[in-house]
Image (cartoon, rainbow, N blue to C red):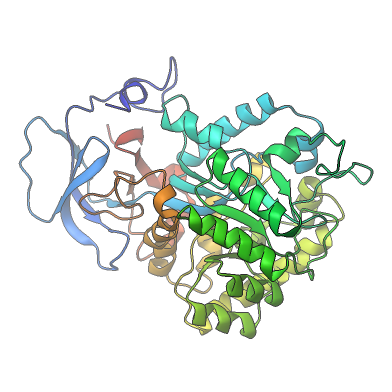
Length: 446
């Protein structure tokens, strides 16, 4: 069994992956199932897991030989959570990662934070830029503990775009005679013009990206691109989209303003990430094009002091502008009936802030119902991840649902989150069991 090592013990001395024999099935009894799709829970249900897949979901008793029985005690059994926009390798302020730490430090801290993320109930994530492929391999091979990772590889940015974090006097990494830094080689590619964009896209795919991340507008954490900027010409965006499509996958873009959103949609982008400065114009375009929107509202819980600490004083005014647009964006998404909205947090650069990842539920409840927010964090997010198509690193079954044939990514939650998703914010006390890929990483029931 591919997870035998992790299931027996998470290396020597760790208590996370609880001892279990994967040759025996696991039968959950006495649970109310939120399947990630239907608002009505399946009451008094039974769920059978064999190896890393769910093989049965039934309201009738299941007789299974040699099964390990886990009595859910009336708890809610639901899919593991999915965060569709994270940066697993950006666990410290960007300036520190660029100037003060080597790649070993990046790897070590990312591994620690990945483990904590899994214990917050996030069993899958879409990494939206950075050197996460090595961490993904370590987790998949049982060398580390963490969520499934859909890596985007290095972000692709124009010169003076949101993927631009050079010192003012630092030469362009693509100029003759220059030597790209580790930062330029693994976190962000600078590419200008169609040939360079094609090369950067294909290089990210070569490194193992399951989808491509392009910076298509101004951003907060970068100092040389105001929020009003529109980044990449239509033909450059189209080049990235076509190169990704040739590999069977898609492009997600970092954008905030209307013009960047409209240009991205026209180029064939399928995932519009952030977009807090959108107006009715781009809301209608998103609705008409039926593309995905991946906003984050964790920024509503951050103050200017924290932003200055993590991103620097030049970024604080831009952050406050984006923060001011967030609640208006929520209202627009709701008003226009845009349903392809997915859960994400985009928390970077501060381990203390990462502990508040689950607070995203609290902010989304200002506009959406508990059921709607749970859909965004489960089945809808699973649909978005599946857009990676032929490059999907986890093709055995769907994610974000409790159904026969789905991956056994499961939470046992104390209470009914379909009625009150606020209980998802207190993950330490309310998540009594966390399973990923059929392996139990937390269990307070035994």
